[in-house]
Amino acid sequence: MSRTPDASRTTDQLLDAAQELAQTRGYNAFSYRDLAERVGIRSASIHHHFPSKADLGRALVARYRERFSDALRRIAGGTGGAPAKLAAYVDLFRATYEHGGRLCLGGMFAADLPTLPSEVQEQVRGFYADNEAWLTRILDAGRRSSELDFEGSPRDAAAASHNRRPTACARWAHSSPTVAGRAPSSTAAPNPLQPH
Image (cartoon, rainbow, N blue to C red; front, side):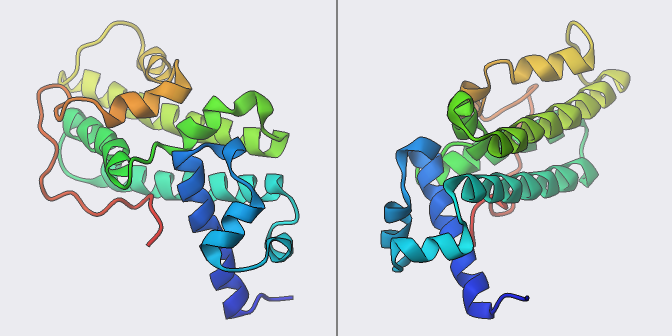
């Protein structure tokens, strides 16, 4: 059974509202009542779109993970070397913070990881695995081109960047505007991680 355009629009509105609440409060600090008030529907109606909060959380992190992966592919395929790509990566977190004081959804969910349903935990772990794999590739390329110098393997350096997962996103959002001596692009595209 296909969904109607109205149902799809409501699902998107629910995910957008849930993303804002999760990025500013955390997953455990909002309810279906909060979503209903923001979207303008009854709380019971949300269950037609997401039968449980676990279903909502899984869908929310999966969507964010997909958008983040798309952004990483664009950065990796863009011009500039490893330092510029790392600067663009940090800019993703900064742009998220500049969008109403929001933090990275992955970081916010990681802070609540022990209390999350298993299907949501799986998506959060996947988000971090995706990021670590991308960082490993960029760090490796930067070392091979002599643009970057760091101790240990690229994989270890990438893993260390996320060793404090709940705070990594906040740390990057507040980091200096340069990475490896390169300023971020002043022509950065709008943040692809935020709802349109």
